[in-house]
Image 1: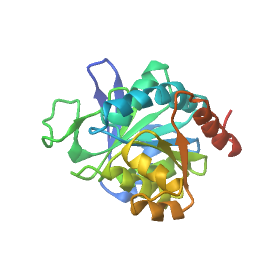
Image 2: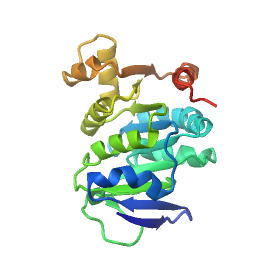
Image 3: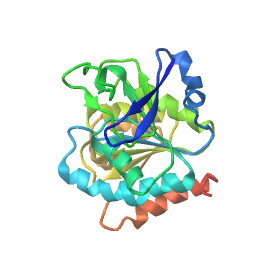
Image 4: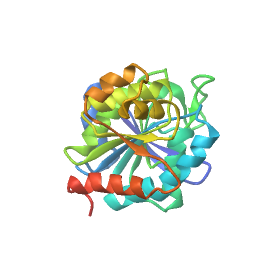
Length: 250
């Protein structure tokens, strides 16, 4: 397990750790210098193929609700760490509000371009989002290789504290992310109106015919939906109530 520092063109820097095996996972929070036992928000969903309309709609959600909520909760936020889609929204929202909460990107080493000048591992590799505070690089060369690591690391960080996964838009890998979230017995909130996978899950939650994969996930009892509209008050209230009920809002 190796600790490193990444320096971005925007003058920001992040602390990173690269791990090779599952036995390293419990040591990651301490290795990064981060506390456990605090609320955790996991952000999954659309990345490079996310539609412009969905990005614009979600921008307010991240800037006006999610980033301030994480700041108020003194939470750790965990996502896929690349400079696109919901991960870019999360990083920029943290920057815009002057957030100080840890924002940890979990990335498969073979899918990202490191800001150290090393050559990209593939033509499909993505840049790291430069407003994240920490990165965990895990084994893998395919998109989605990071999914189980991300889900289990979030549980490791929460250490019994309240936690939730927030699902916006998304494609094939998002199905995998949601499945791992459910496996970790994590409350999983789906943003209805954000498009693609999130909307298919929301339709299933409404009792409509949807993707067959949704039924197994719904049977877990961990999925709930949040409806996006111009009035974001219900979304804010629902998330605050979720964490308040678990005794986490300070």
